[in-house]
Length: 163
Image 1 (spheres, rainbow, N blue to C red):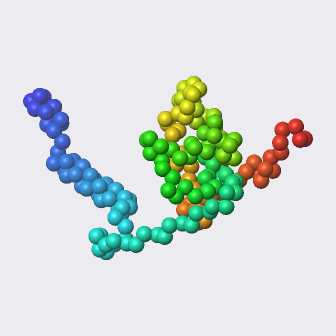
Image 2 (image 1 turned 30 degrees about the horizontal axis):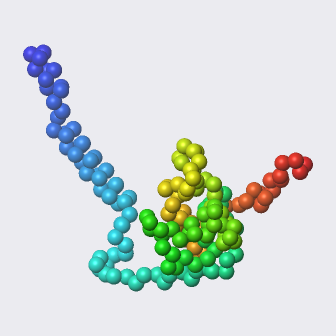
Image 3 (image 1 turned 60 degrees about the horizontal axis):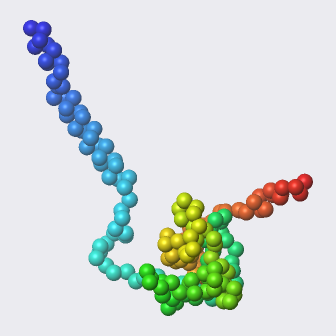
């Protein structure tokens, strides 16, 4: 008799099984309501919407202030028609160390001549070769996300030794 009682306790009753299934269904429904729609506004899902107009590039060759520390510099000139491929990088014809003085262009950072381990290279590192992966032309365009960055000088912090 005792072994039959133990076996009976190990098998959950049908009520517990139904309660667990009901809880799973309710939880799944709640999770489905929390996930936003990724397909855009309701209506015709196959509708083609017009693209936003391209921003107007700022080509005044005036360098702008960076929006946050460690921001890659913004390109202050047009790069339309620049060839940037595995075989050719037009940016380097002016910004590479040996050409920058004659071109009057700022030299690319020495970090672009380093490996991940910090070892210096004779030429631009392959991981820094595609400039537009980090650097973008200046555009006369409203930011997509608001910027609340404040420089240390705006926060009232004084320079060391100025007390």
